[in-house]
Length: 165
Image 1 (tube, one colour):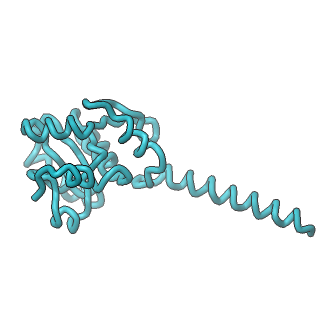
Image 2: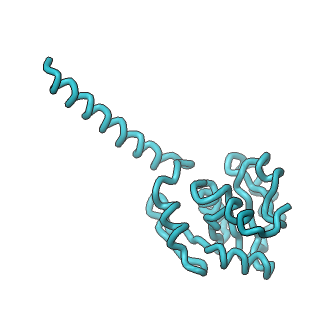
Image 3: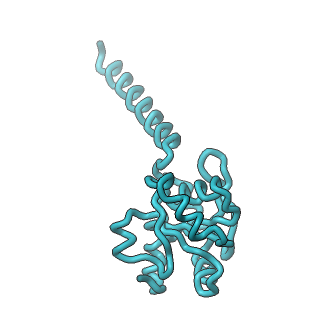
């Protein structure tokens, strides 16, 4: 085998592995947000808007300014999608924790406690965290129609000096 042939075959194998990894990530329920999360956070207008989500769904996002208005008016329930340790270290004031990994165990209590919530804003760590979008999709599946994602998450909330507990 010639040197060029080996390099060519290695290039093909690396390409196949890369495409396979991207496909695997796209199909995972909690796949990493590679591009759309950054783009959505940068382009989100100053109100609630719909952006293309994973697998062709429409994901509703809320800008920082609109999240702030919803928070100050008390018109929305903020739902933290982060792990319990991060929630306990600090969360948006008044927010409740709802874990993706335990949604089947906790959804009935959540529905009982917050069944009348008119607007739900989900959030997690920040722009690169996909959990808030996944949680929003699940809440829509459970019958909530006005669910939106605050992509800036806890990182932007704290950076802007807004209330945490």
